[in-house]
Length: 420
Image 1 (cartoon, rainbow, N blue to C red):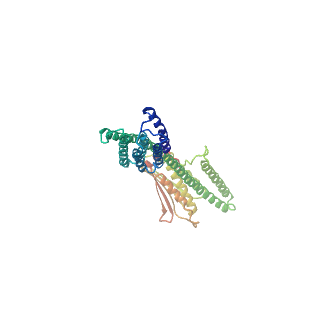
Image 2 (cartoon, rainbow, N blue to C red; image 1 turned 120 degrees about the vertical axis):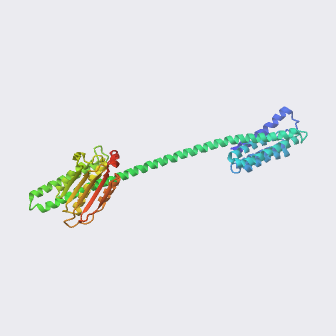
């Protein structure tokens, strides 16, 4: 575009300047050249050479500037006259490109050189065209220097303006790109948070399903085993065991429907809200399946604590963790220590913490083998969720013990949480 504009300007000026000079000074002016003279064609060739050099100004701005600034010197030597100004205009454009493209430190060297070449060319053009009779006069020298300074100054101003516009455009583009990257990062962060939430929810659901299955299925299995032994010798006891199987199955289905409702995001689906007060009911339910379970509650002597007030200061999530621990421990005892005597103990005497203990005295029947290990893993995950302490292991008498300690002050924030 710059090369085409330079070529058009040279051709238009080469045609217009002779006509204007002829109209003002007469056709006998020796500085006037016309298309019929070889000098006119020399001016056109020099201007087109500058235009051709402009094709490479983006890649080699310094070399193009020096080449374009050298053309006026050639013009002053070959065809001095009024057409000299056509070649200086291209120098202004080349200076503007150099200032816009080059670092200021590099352009500060080549631009003064270009201005000096223009000044020398201007001085030579005035002397050779006869406009100044004395080459050493101050008029010729000062005029030449002024011409070079003006050409460079105009180009520098235009170049700085274009440089500022270019920098602003690049800054806007970078800002848009930065905003786009920030939006992408936020979108990825939201996706990661959603995936993490979904993963946590899946783990919570798996724990719920495991607890429900381990608790109810073990009770159903024990009741079914009792039916097979009692159906011939004690029909009434077998009927009672069958009723217990039905009750356990109905409760298991209710719990499964509640969890499945959460997975389906049904409006009626709610999480389990079992608390420490429901532990006694859980113990009574396990007794109906034939397991010998003892429930022990320790409270402060000066407090008349009812089961409704049990675990005051402990949040609902922490109480659910304790309930699930008791449920899982009793289910494990039924599977791995059938016939063992179990004790469920809740110590609510300390003001800063609450302890829940489940212990059995060992198996009176062969151990059916190790389980999948998910019960203890679920207990550990739940305890970590509420910043509780969980300890489990074998007892000196050959039994098994699970102890959960809940900190009251650390659990108060759990009111806003959902159960795991």
